[in-house]
Length: 323
Figure 1: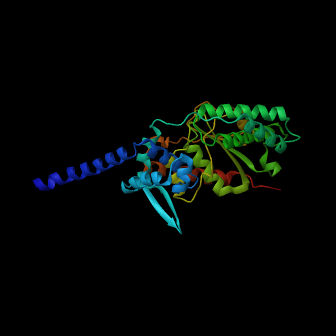
Figure 2: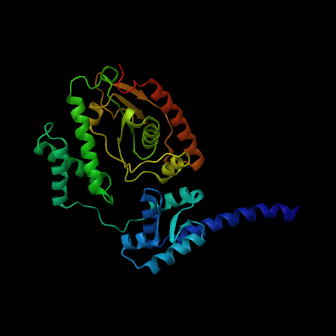
Figure 3: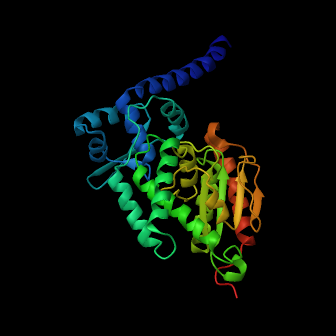
């Protein structure tokens, strides 16, 4: 019996020591940067050439760091022809995510060249010609840029996110200012659904991704956060990928007045009274636990709950081009 009683604690110590060793292995600043780039990748994977170019390092240096993390069971590799892709091992995602999120960033706050902001304004002015003046578009581009930069100062995609955020806000404003746009059933137009949670990194992103995958062009989906964080929780991305759903380049963004005004359905998830109320909109409050600090099993449970709610919501929405 003594030998049997001591074997279990030893096994637990072995697992704990292995995890601790892995965490020490990724404490290197370069490895933290590599992990961040993998988390930010649209499909969760990158090659050594891409990583080296983004980090400004040589390929042998990157290969050295990647091999260490692969040996420690943090990264996995997939070969397609001559190309080798590296990605996070799904079972280690939660541990690595928590570690990387709390590691100091060595990057300076992001900024966008004023010439790029001017180009974004020109492009959106062309897109919304006859609806908004160039001056109005430029104001929305500038305010969208400042809102995103305040919420995610190290956003590596600040230019494209600014353009998309400004376009979403202007589109919502155009809908809100048009006569009869909130009556989707009568107009036959796509229904506008806005999902709002606190960080816009978990529940609202799950719901929006699942609804987009189910509804296609039938629904225009937007998300926002009352206190948005910098990036979507990688555990959310992983949990959605397990059921064949992609976040499709989404990112956390702040809640603004015009997106609420332009929505037909507003669904809140734990953000309290942060969302303004306008007549003529359908408001729903989904009481869901925040998956931010949950294990992957907990995240999956929230995902499945949201999936059921989204399917029920979709059945209640009017079809496009209804008679």
